[in-house]
Length: 289
Ligand code: AMP
Image (cartoon, rainbow, N blue to C red; front, top):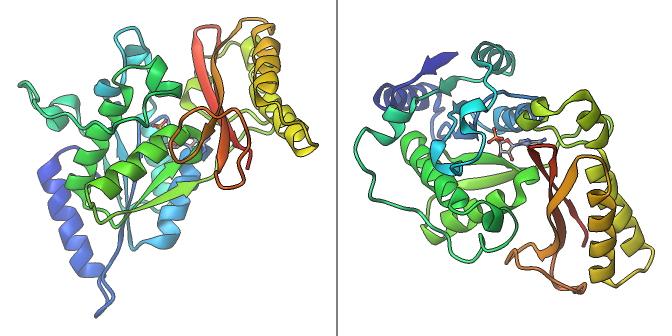
């Protein structure tokens, strides 16, 4: 496994691997898994999928400052470079790309902004202004640097997945976006690097977020149709748990990511949630139809 922190040698390595692993007319495919590190089984599932589908697997580890707001957790975001490397090695990753901020953005002002309209108007986009522009910027740069054939994103970050899909389509990037199911702890809590912030008491409460989504889904599947009532019941329930404060809980159309107030056979609907458990903001979502 090669660990590379500079763009230019990474490009050369990928180029020579592509040549070496191309078999006749069968071009070697490159799969990219973008991450911010502190890798867990959620990331591992993306890497395993990439490994199964590509001749070359690249994992990027970069805590992207552009996607953090001024009062967010950029400076205390957890890091574990040695464990990350060991896990990548174990999963058969070919290349880890770990640039620093200067390598990614240089030292001078960056004039370009990558903005996907409308899809960031609700959910995390509303609570974290500029967040998805930061995501689109770093993801675009990684796509230009690595030139992957396929790239792997988790459904846990459903808005990010949808926005990146749209960006790739709108900009005609020749990249397949592969979505990967959310990996959960045994008690249902979605695995997240930010779970490390939770105190033991908060950790015990956190699985209630997913349980609440499941309860709503079950009520819908047993015939309830008043989505607004279900939404307010769920918000009320979560807000009354110790240390919990709902940021949003919304039924959204998966295509447009706009709120919906009724089921519609022609549209896929997701229930998406963000909850502060103490100071830690956790997100999750569940497919409704
Ligand atoms: P992050 O390091 O948090 O930026 O996540 C990197 C990628 O891993 C993103 O595509 C996430 O959606 C994905 N991911 C994070 N947690 C999970 C999880 N529990 N299950 C599946 N994918 C995940």
